[in-house]
Length: 60
Image 1: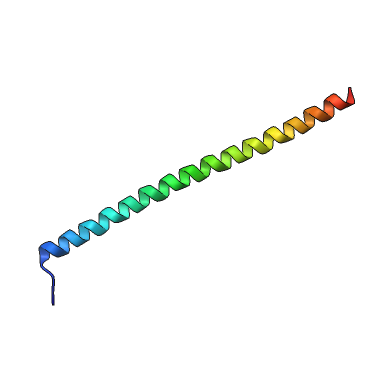
Image 2: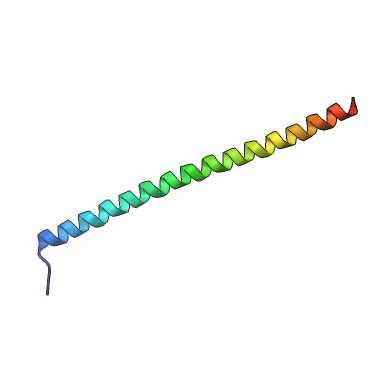
């Protein structure tokens, strides 16, 4: 059993489109993960700054 050239072309195009969709989805996930890491880093920095400020005010 063999498939027609048109069917083969269609299947190839569908595979290519699926791969493109997957790459777009993965890129979006990576962007989201990057933003999450950035927010976490900013939160840690703010917490450290708050502790330093509290410590400085306690020394006054």
